[in-house]
Amino acid sequence: MLVTSAREPDQAALRQVIAAGDYYIGRVAAGHALRILDLEGNQAADTLFYNASDPTERYSAMDTIREQGNVYLTAGSVLRSNGNRPMLEIVADTCGRHDTLGGACATESNTVRYDLEKRCMHACRDSWMLAVTEHPEFGICKRDISHNINFFMNVPVTTEGGLTFEDGISAPGKYVELVALMDVVVLISNCPQLNNPCNGYNPTPVELLVWDH
Amino acid sequence: MEHAEYVTELAAGSHWSLRMRRGTRMTLTDLEGGANVGMLFYNPESLLERYNAPDTLKCQHTFRLTRGHCLYSDMGRIFASIIEDSIGWHETVCGNSHPDQVAARWGGRDYQQDRNDWHQNGHDAFLVELAKYGLGRADLAANLNLFSKVVTDADGNLQRITDHSPAGSRVTLRFEMDTLVLLHTCPHPLDRSAAYPARPVQVSLGVAEPVAADDYCRNFRPENRRGFANNALYHLGQG
Image 1 (tube, rainbow over the protein chains, first blue to last red):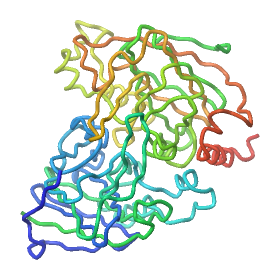
Image 2 (tube, helix red, strand yellow; image 1 turned 90 degrees about the horizontal axis):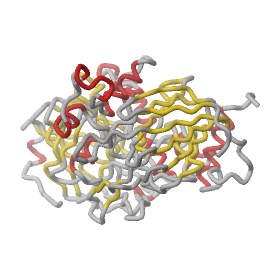
Image 3 (cartoon, rainbow over the protein chains, first blue to last red; image 1 turned 90 degrees about the vertical axis):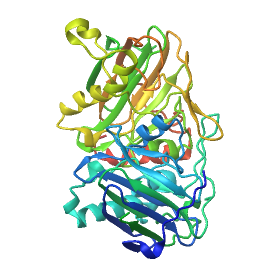
Image 4 (tube, each protein chain N blue to C red; image 1 turned 30 degrees about the vertical axis):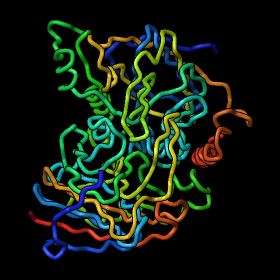
C-alpha cells in the first residue's frame, strides 16, 4: 500500500547517510519516527529491531507475518516481537512491498548460495557482527542476531510454494517510515551483496532520518 | 522401513529434546492426522549455531519444505536432510502458538484439572527445552512446523490448509552433523479447530544408510552439494 509521509526532512532530529556496505545502530524512542530513504534505488536495507531495555525481546518475522496474515510488509504492518508484542508500525511506504522471509546475507550462506570460494566477500552479517562488537553498550551479541527485514527487497512467494528473487521495485527517493511503539534499538546493514539483484549488483548509500515527533 | 533402534510416542501438547548423532535418522508419524510438530536445531558443540529458516528457504528457492530439501544452520552447514516425506509440504515461517492465544481459543492451561492433558503452547514448550541447555528467549529462531501447510496468494495473504496431514503421514530426517533437536507437539498457531487439537506423534530413531554419491538430497540442488561440502570440511579428520 503506497502511503506518503507529511514529515519534513529539514525538521528531522537525525539525518545519517549509511554508506554502501556500512551499518547503523542507535536508539529510537517510543513515539519517534524513523525513515529509511533509498537514495539511488534498488538498495536492500537489512534491518533488526530490539526492545531497548531488554534485547532478548526483538523483531520476530514469524509473529509479524502470522498476526497480520500476510508475508509482505508495507504501510499498516505492525512489526511484532518474539513476545508477540507490537514494536513499531509502518506508517508510510512509497515502495509498496518489503521482504521478511529471505533473511540476511552471511559469508557462510554465500558459500552455499554462490560458491565455496566466495566466503570472504563482505556480507550483512559481518556488518552486524562489527556493529554489536563496536557498540557493547546495547547489550546485543550474536545470539540476538536473527530473522530480519529486508527493506526495499522483493521476494515473491509462488502459490506452488516457491521463493523467487525479483529485481527490486524500489527506485531513487523511495522510502519507508515507521513509528516506534516502544523504545527500540535499530540495527541496519546497508547490504553489500554483489551476487544477486537485491542491490542491482551495485550497492549504494541509504539515508536514515529520525524525527522526535 | 529400516530397522528402528527406538520407538516412542509423544502425546499431544508435549515437548522433548535430544542429541542426534551424525548419520542417524528420525521418522515422525502423524498417528491420528492433523498433527503439528514444532522443531528447532542447535549445534551441541556451539549452541550459537542454530537452524536458520531464511537461509534454508532462500538457498533452495523454496517456501515449502519436502523430500530433497536440506535444513541449514546459520553457518552454512546442514543439520538434517528430509529423506522421506509422504505429504509434500511442511512450513517454517509461522512460528509458535503463544499462551494467551491458546487460552483465548481453547481455555487456559490448568494442570490441577487437566494434568498432562493441559493446553500447552509451542512458545512455552520451546522455552522449557531451551532452558535445559542454558538457552533462552534470545536463542529462539523461526522453527519448523512439520505436518503443517500454509500457502500464500498473489498479494501475500497467508492461509493454513486444514486436513493437510492424514493419519499415517510420515517424514524422515537424516542428520548430517551432530544436532541438538528440540521438538513439541503443540497446535499450529493458525489452527482454528473448535477444540484444542490434541494429536500424538510417533518418533522412531535409528541409524541411516550412508550418504551415497547419488544421494537425492545432496544432488537436489547445486546449493546442497556445497552445503554437504561445508559439512565435510567441518568433519575433516573425523573420518
